[in-house]
Structure formats: C-alpha cells, structure tokens
Amino acid sequence: MPEVIIHDDESFERALRRFKKKCEKAGILSDLRKHRHYEKPSERRKRKMNAARRKNRRTRPA
Image 1 (spheres, rainbow, N blue to C red):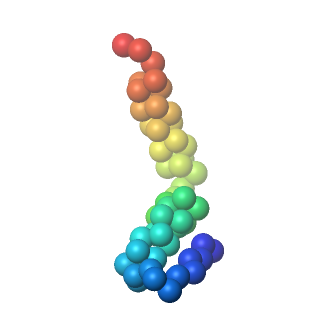
Image 2: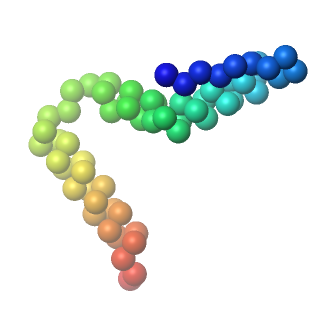
C-alpha cells in the first residue's frame, strides 16, 4: 500500500495528488477494476486476444 508523508509546508491537495500518482504507478486502481466482478476464462481470453490485436495493429506499419 503506497503511503505519503505530508511535509510541514505542503498542502493537502498536493499530498493527495502525490498519493494518487503512487497508486497509479502501483497499479492499484486497474487491479481494483479488474476484480470488480468475476470474469469467465473465455471472456478473459477474448479480452486478451482483442488487446493483442489492437497492439499489433498499432505497432505494425500499414
């Protein structure tokens, strides 16, 4: 779990922004969205296949 120590001269908003950045880097939010509901193995395969297609389409020159 990321933690942020608030310095004396730092505002709460700035510390909150640093905390959100640390959470984003740690992948907590994406992991939370992934586990929000059960995904069948066939749905997972389909999602990964579509992601691979999109990635391949982007990287391969036209």
